[in-house]
Amino acid sequence: MNSSKSSIPLDQNRAPIHEALEQFRQMRVVPFDVPGHKRGRGNPELTEFLGQQCVSVDVNSMKPLDNLCHPISVIREAEQLAAEAFGAAHAFLMVGGTTSAVQSMVLTACKRGDKIILPRNVHRSVINALVLCGAIPVYVNPEVDHRLGISLGMKREQVERAIKEHPDAVAVLVNNPTYYGICSDLREIVKLAHAHNMLCLADEAHGTHFYFGKNLPVSAMAAGADMASVSMHKSGGSLTQSSFLIAGPNINAGYVRQIINLTQTTSGSYLLMSSLDISRRNLALRGEKIFEQVQQIAEYARNEINSIGGYYAFGKELINGDSVFDFDSIKLSGHTLDIGLAGIEIYDLLRDDYDIQIEFGDIGNILAYLSIGDRIQEVERLVSALAEIRRQHQRDKSGMLTQEYIPPQVVASPQEAFYADKISLPIMETEGMVCSEFVMCYPPGIPILAPGEKITADILNYIRYAKEKGCSMTGPEDPEIEHLNVLK
Image 1 (cartoon, one colour):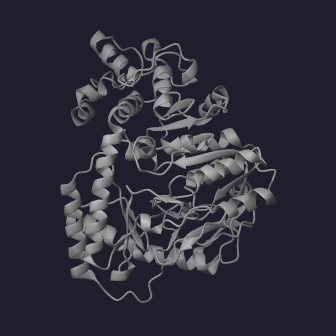
Image 2 (cartoon, helix red, strand yellow):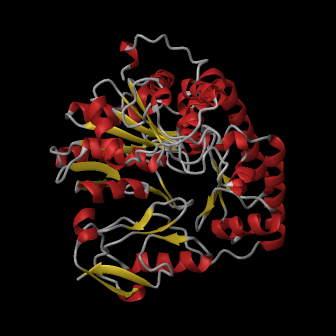
Image 3 (cartoon, helix red, strand yellow):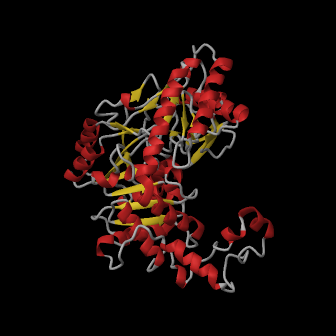
């Protein structure tokens, strides 16, 4: 897998999976294999919806097209090209989303009983991985910007303290960046981890562009991290659910493949794989210019939103050299409480009244996700809508919650709590008990409660408030979030 050892000349103009599919389509092979729609003939409505060109390459693994579980030809070559493009030693095509990449990364580094140092404001996929493997989280509680109500990065001294208090930990995990664009001092955290024989893992679900743009925060591979999960379908332009897991030279690629194959499908989608292949080529060839344009659009949008009044589209002025070591200038986040509206309320107004779909709104902020497909005219439409919302809906902000992050009280490991004997109680009667499931607003998918954490009055008030404001709550068995499973 190591691209440096490959005998195949690496040419970033190539897209080997895409090329093999084009050649396959021209061969007019008679299909007596799966999928059962048989190049779309058996499902004309699906073919009409997706198009003949799409369904004709929705095929199964076969010798000319390689096999995702054990790639030896075109998929292997695509992974070698991706590794080179991302400055990694190894790359793996992932068709289960970045959730699958994150879980494979954590499962590679940790086994039952191992400790892993991480911020608590991680995506649920990280804690899900701890449920699966039985590793023990050592949380570094991030600082909070109390004006914005958002959690910041991990401070160097916090990581160093956690390492000294838990020298037996096997890895440190870092968000690079957070959903809001906040970056920790990744280079120094990598040095701290490696100095104590720990791996450094990066969740780069929102940092694909770091590898290709200029004047952006450092990427995980450039910082010397051991593994990173890169959500290519977010800012990189590939199809939803496609992602990369990339790794440095000290990681055993064969073992990583075994870990991936524990949970990833044996029927890898060639639509997803070819979209990764084509998107990698696009960014390798044109990414620098593309993301320069996206940065210009984001800066224009920030200036325009801030000129409206009442909103605060934050940017690099947040940088303090530690808990905000750097900021992803492509992220377009805006604080909304000064006009008396929760972010989720503006999210709903934009969608329902203006046909504008932003990424998410929480109780104090919104995020409009900018990437390679955005144009200035759509940004102007967003700015105009925000100005009109302020004129028509602004109200007094007294009584509104601002806190986005509540430090957890960890009582049991996620795996222990998830599989423990439990009872279901009305959620407002669970104060003081230990939760055995997740509760979160999705997006962003950062748990308010995770298995093994004590339920407090502050947490219950936050959940009640978020529901009242219209946040989409997910996680518990009870879809209405009226009951919660707690340890007996």
